[in-house]
Amino acid sequence: MARRIGLGRGLDALLDNNDEEIPAPVTPAKNKASNAVPAAAQTTVQLPVDKLVPNPGQPRKNFNETEMNELAASIKTYGIIQPVIAANAGDGTYIIIAGERRTRAARLAGLSTVPVIIRDYTDQKKLEISLIENIQRSDLNPIEEAAAYKNLMDFSNLSQDELAMRMGKNRSTVANALRLLRLPVEMQKSIEEGKVSPGHARALLSVTDAKAREKLYRELIAAELSVRETEKKAAALNSEKSKDKKTAKKGKRRPPEVDAMEEKFIGKLGTKVVIDGGLNSGRILIDYYSMEDLERLYEILGG
Image (cartoon, rainbow, N blue to C red; front, side, top):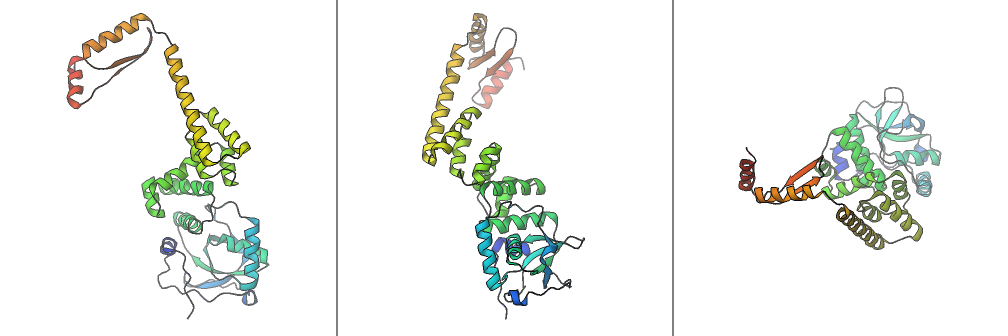
């Protein structure tokens, strides 16, 4: 009996493999073309490799050349052990749902056909399967993974909690990944290239001022700072910015009439009151400390 190929519980459930039996490994010698279209979704057929096209929702955009060459060499020797999963596009081509790396490597190896299981999936499920397959195999760089999360959230109208449950991840893991997309494109590119780690990125994100963040980014690239060094410098920049704000606030002089009116409000209301503005415009901030306190203020203010 042919052996079952395991894809991981999450992906296996999405592929709905139930009682599926995958044929034994296909070697290049047996890799002959076939134009047959399967009668059932569980059937494995040989399809011309040039009929397989990438999934538009495929989260993985970068393919390491060295790894692809190694995979191609393995395929030349042993063939494709695990069939590609694809969906009929209806125009003579088949959209790759799972197995784009194998398909690319098969082209490099010179194979004319590859073993394929043809399935019919919704666009949402195509995206989910591509995402989960890559995550389970650790094939995505941090930016690709974050972009895939966002695409799936937008496409399926999922919250972070719902996405985390579907991916089998902690919510904090998903949230930290999505935060990377808030960085400028250049910084994201550095993460994709491995010049900046997710730890470095989190330190950069902690810097509240955009110019200070850019300065720190340039420094960590030039000096190859460690994550710990970057975190320390980020904290120092935030502390410096906070001091600058306090100094600027102290340096502002308000008209004495506003100061006097603020004191009158405090005496009348019996709570902390801050007037943020000048003689012509501004806002009044009134603190309260309980529901009863809020009701008291309401009565005083003529409610």
